[in-house]
Amino acid sequence: MEYIEEADYDSLIIPYQDAMANLMTRLDSLNNDYRRKYKNYPIHHMQERIKKKESIEEKLRRKGFEISVKGIEENLADVAGIRVICSFPDDIYATAKMLTDQDDIRVIQVKDYIINPKPNGYRSLHLILEVPIFLSNEKKNMKVEVQFRTIAMDFWASLEHKLKYKKNIENAEEISKELQRCAEASSQLDLRMQALRDRIEAERE
Image 1: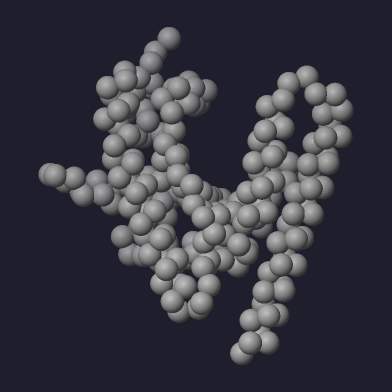
Image 2: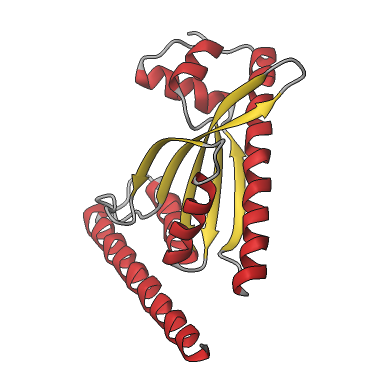
């Protein structure tokens, strides 16, 4: 079975870490600027991660790609990932637009699982972005996956992820249906809280 050498993996991820840090800094700046202008933060918090070597190898095998640095760079767009947790659904789209409007960021792919949830109820806005980083002798464009969720969406997804990997569950189909109902209830809560915020802000004007 083919593997990626540890040294190759360590060298590979450094540009991805730089690209991820670049985007995290931009998102922090956008959040602070939005706070100065509109008196609230659209971003509640952020999480970042680099895909582990074993996970990369497993994904390459599963998709039938070459197990190599070249295979990674040409075929995987989620080696580096950022999860942006917002308080309200409108904040997701506002923040995503502010980020993607920057003239040196290229949008590679958009998957809107908020408008079109997955069958299990999962909701999130997924973007694959290409961001430039500047090395000692070159500029390099790197791909980073950015996921936008509300607090409620993230809470549901975290619990669903834990339950999904439990083995030999009785009544699995009923549990799956209940998770879908919980996802819908979570979505309705987001919409109601958004409506409350809009109402409060309208009364302040």
